Structure formats: structure tokens, C-alpha cells
Amino acid sequence: MQCPFCQKEGEPVEKIGASTVEVRCPHCKALVAAYQKGMEGILKNLVSLERFERGAK
Image: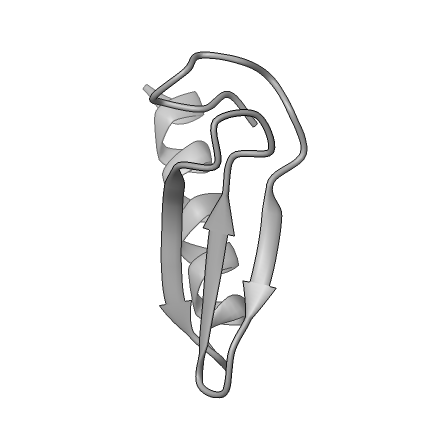
């Protein structure tokens, strides 16, 4: 993943709370995503669909 804030490449760090998941840049520690637990499947499907649509153009 490339951080939108510091532009460095790295594997994001997830912090799992009681009902949420926060994803942070390993370099600058900026919050790059947050979602409720249980939404992983839906989010992965949305990202896959977006990539598919981008490739079809």
C-alpha cells in the first residue's frame, strides 16, 4: 500500500478494537482507513469490483 500522506510503501498496520478496525501507515502512523468489524468481505468485494471496472475501460 502507498500511504496517501507520506507517499511511502508499506504493509498497513491494523488495530482491532471492540467494534472497529483502524488501518494506519507503518511509517507516519496516519489513519488511512477505519471500518466496523464484519465489513471486511463487503469492502474486499467493492475494491475488486472497482479494479475490474477500471480494467474494463
